[in-house]
Length: 394
Image 1 (cartoon, rainbow, N blue to C red):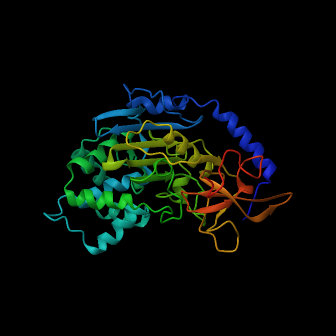
Image 2 (image 1 turned 120 degrees about the vertical axis):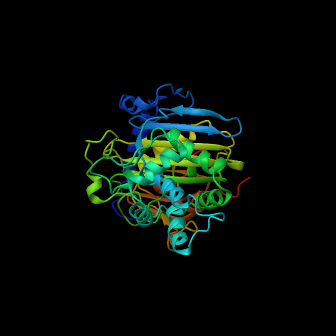
Image 3 (image 1 turned 135 degrees about the horizontal axis):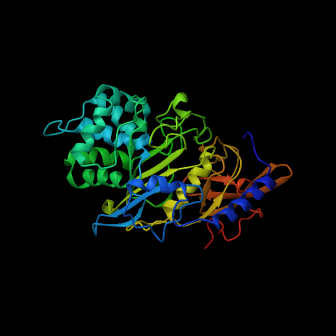
């Protein structure tokens, strides 16, 4: 581990964060008003909890009843980040013949683009098939009302395509209800296989993937300066270059604030379509944004969703190792984004870990990661986490 924060400081920060939670509001703060310009008529959810400082566009559509259960600024435009890869894939697959055969070379690009958000593949399709013309075609084909190509001066940046939560729902409704079966099965099958670590090494199992048990299928998006959001090796955010990270502030759609989006389907038979698009204050860490979009997503009314059992707790320190067993004897399975909230299923005694002046023999099992972290890195005043059962205890 490197760059660790002393446990005492981490616990003080956790206490401050707990106070901030008390001021959550049912809708985003004043900045969200600007994003709502295209979302007139939205009903503001009484269930959703948008963390302070976060601008959100939310839509949850129940396919069983044909109604929305959540809408918050659902027509607001956000830069799409990697969510636009859905449109790149659909444009390529459009009218490919009676059997919709995918050539092997394209399968080798499309599969990691959908499963692991591969940027090189997206750039290939963007440049090969017409850049903004792709967006124009898909807007006409699907009847998208809020989706527009990247602004002038950013034509090469596919991640700057603008879309809304309600347009995202429309994309998934096309995939599930109108697309040819081979197209539906190819795209949705890869989204069900979403990898925890994206091709650029970002941990992409936030939002839907963390809030609900499978079955789910997700296409996530992230854009902005997130140097601490990886599964181990720092990297820039998906779909952006160092130049893009600077932003411009000149476009109608916000290109400056860090964006984190979670979209997909939840429940048996893809019952609910969920789109959660978020912008975060400049300087927000990946762990904070990851945690905030998780809390927002968990607060939503999502028919058919099964919520995982356990206790959500905050962590401190960078690159906390998730271990196969409660010891440091084996190489880590993965590393957590700095300061992220995790679901703890149970705890067990194991190897003593020391971060002076503290020592702790308790380890927390994280079911969503399939491994353990030392309790010393969990923001709690006690070595043994209160209210968390021991592993194996009845």
